[in-house]
Image (cartoon, rainbow, N blue to C red):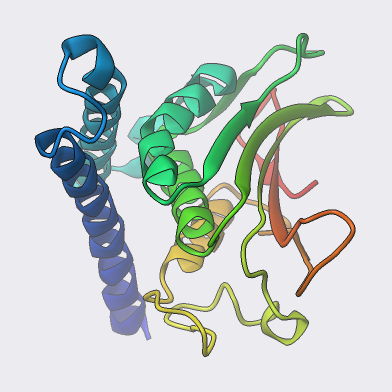
Length: 234
């Protein structure tokens, strides 16, 4: 069983590295083809996105070589999510999607948490990548808000949604729905990161199939306690 788990975790690691490399390749092709212009000012944001993705991959590889607790640190989530927004904006734009970063003017206890930077990058990158991959048109919202004394991260999209009968299985390793083209590893990473942070609950999902009065297909929520490294759903 341990060997099987190790193999799945290795596959998940490779999955995340390849996702990052794929994103970089897409942006570099856009730059080569002059899709966003040729001047330094026009392509600066894309170059920043490539650098951000490269740094994320390097952090992920480095984390495999040492004790993961070495990467636990204080994280300003406002700045952290801003970097993810800048990194994934060109990918959303390439699919004619709107990616929006929504914040508040003031946070009750600030925006700093203690956690595993690499783990959070893996978790949120997979959720954003999934949102982009499975949203044919519309918008994706990355939000940072307050709930009681905690910070809440929400990723909402107007994609295809998740059938209610699939909610129980969606975080299982290698599981895929019939209409999925993915590897079945992205949401497994999301759950694994939550478990690694001693979460009592590993996910919260709202999902609607078809058309609703509000075009909301699904939303993932993550609640972060600002005083210690512990993650719970909102």
